[in-house]
Length: 137
Image 1 (tube, helix red, strand yellow):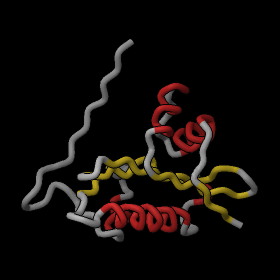
Image 2: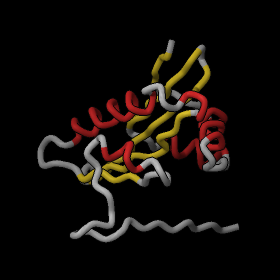
Image 3: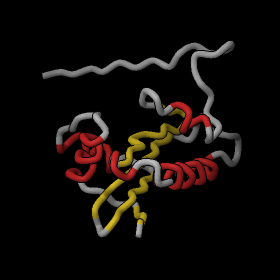
Image 4: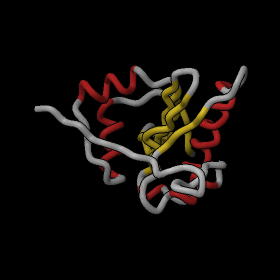
């Protein structure tokens, strides 16, 4: 049976990231990211974290991050369930003027997010989303 909660350890977070091909992050950075998360949902089977999704927001915009499900558990509705809970949380943030919601899809997963109302970019009116990774040693 799949259970859901709002808690994840640094090791669980990195295990999920590694399993979906995103690599791991330093302990302090992960701990900070988890602490600054406004909404977190973690899927578990027998206590083992098999999926996660999180949201950060500033009142005007929300960013959906780290939507990941272990490959051997994909296709079972876990990501759909977590995204439904994510969107319910964000809907609550939209009261009093709305909120702009952002996410970056992994390649090939765009259709999954389209089912939740997300538009593909670029389109006729908006340019492409852009990213930059900065690292200092």
